[in-house]
Length: 369
Image 1 (cartoon, rainbow, N blue to C red):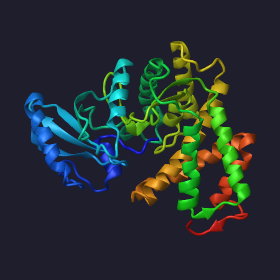
Image 2 (cartoon, rainbow, N blue to C red):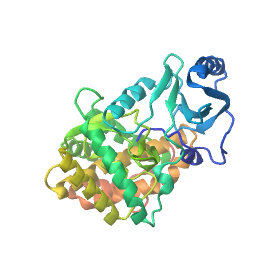
Image 3 (cartoon, one colour):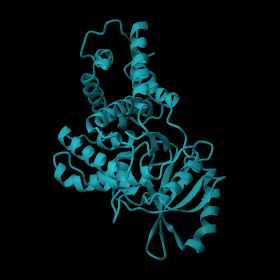
């Protein structure tokens, strides 16, 4: 996943506890405020903006944040505030265009001050798909997941090489290393022995090699319920700026092995089968054997959850955002369940159990590194 949350009121409840609607805009860097005011004033007439209505829409796990503003026509707009020395908005603009070309509902860029990092966007609404989900009611969730599948297939059908960065071995390994560096060493405060480090690195290499066997398509890279917006006829899609060209198994893995909600395996299988069938009918390279495809999804999900555990530990320890670590037991559960299914991953399962205290430490040295 990327280090961001979508610009919605639902996301806001997760991002800033206690924040109420129409919260005033406060500038952490006061030097940006005059530039923003000048930029907003330059757009006021053309886009019929109502400056007094400006308020915070969503705090972000990165340096990016979103504001919401009314217009004289009654519609609302989103403003992205992304300091250019910390965030690259060019990728957002590029991927938004790709999504529109693919027939996927995504924000439209109405104005962009690239030098200052300010962007005016269409507003996809205030309610995420996540806001309508109940882990105990998969039947009610199914229609939304079928919509999510339809948008995903359209996105993947638009794929072509050499447009987005490759999701290659180096990136897969770098992401998994976050688990070692931030979750194990920094969050758990453990020092692995040489043998344990070798076990972890071998597991990473095996997982990366397995995932790279999958055909490559456009990958959203954080395709999950908190980044999908309710709407008709299609769900809207957000948080796509880190899109890459990589394994076709990735986005369905992130959708069904969500970082913030868990479903029973029967429901996961049902939706994954429906995706596989839709992808087959559309001509996407998912293969003729669902069992083989599903194994690929499990291995891809394993890579993702190792990465996310590391990212969430980093958000807590480096960025002072502890709420994310509340969901780490979910990731460890995903990791253990997948590792337990495959003989090649038995050493990883034993090591994770040692890290989590389910087995004797066997050489782990406790204490912050």
